[in-house]
Length: 162
Image (cartoon, rainbow, N blue to C red):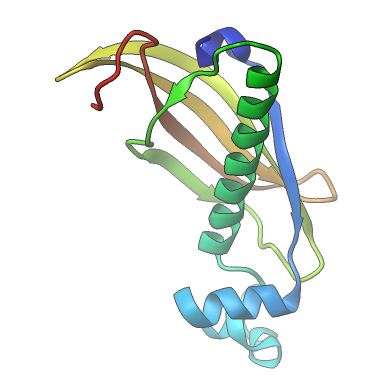
């Protein structure tokens, strides 16, 4: 079964939710984005955000973790129903990344993906390129993250990689 058959264009898929703690924000930022407003709550008060907030990359990483969890659950569900799941490959990239609002300690972000397009691509091998709007919404219903994502799907009769 193809992704577009499972999730038609415009179908908003809820991937999962993550609550960002101060400890998680600092731990991620110390390793990957050590700016003062991500690693020091006191120093963050003097920056434009006014308080400790998550790195945008931390928010993106949690979108990806939620997506992988969602897809894993969906693939298991399809197999249990006797339906051949899509053969998903890597992402060739994303575009139009927007960090729309800071994610503060205590915020719960719910992540979504809405398929918008699916097209066949002829390269070394044929595959399908699925495009979607990906987003994160905080507990107040405010968008904090948005980007256009892409995902390769192999044709059911193709066994070779792209």
